[in-house]
Length: 294
Image (spheres, rainbow, N blue to C red):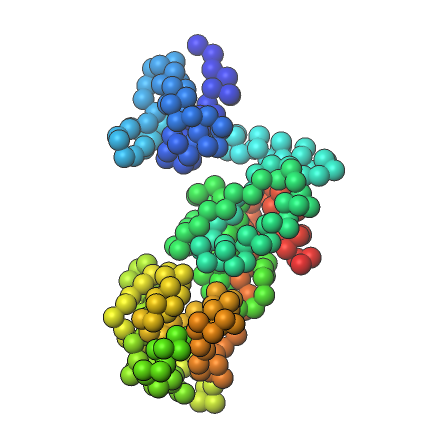
């Protein structure tokens, strides 16, 4: 029996993603075609490389050993192919970026729209997650987050403008409840509470004449994403602490009213980040250069 490198492509993809469907998306095959390729490989090896259930796919001990030995070779081939790609006049390939849904909508998508016009042979895949993922383990090229969330082994490049904040509610809400003039007065209001997925509530940050303040607000609505907080504010449920750009159109139209503006700090811009000690593909290098030029 003589197996060729190509016989292991489906195996490597499934092992990376722990999913036949995601592996198929990477390889341009249907999940059933990937499953068939794995069955053929197992028959030729005469051993099982994956444990499968209706909900999960996991490597067997033999499969894990095989994956650990094969993956560096496949990664090296990918690197060599990409190095050849760098000799092209226009880079090509796929660039995978992960970020939070709000950051994707407000910052990343507008930048990517301009990037692909300049580099039409590069396909950009954007995945969103409110949780910070391990971009190396998830086989993602880069991520976009606040700098406070990044590890020291990441290269970070500012992307987009500095972040402005806004404390907002509807005019009808403020007609029923006197607008706060000091952050401490938020305790008398219905606030839309934002919490991290860990369950820890987000403290509203302020910076004014008395220095920096962090307020633990209370309210009857507790959410874990900013878009839902915006929708709750538009429905008149209370006061929300939002990204200014997220609320801009509603502030301009008068649907929302801004308060405590003198107390709101300006945050540094988001950071495009990628592993410091990993080979940087031509597609990612082109994107980083594009971001720096904006």
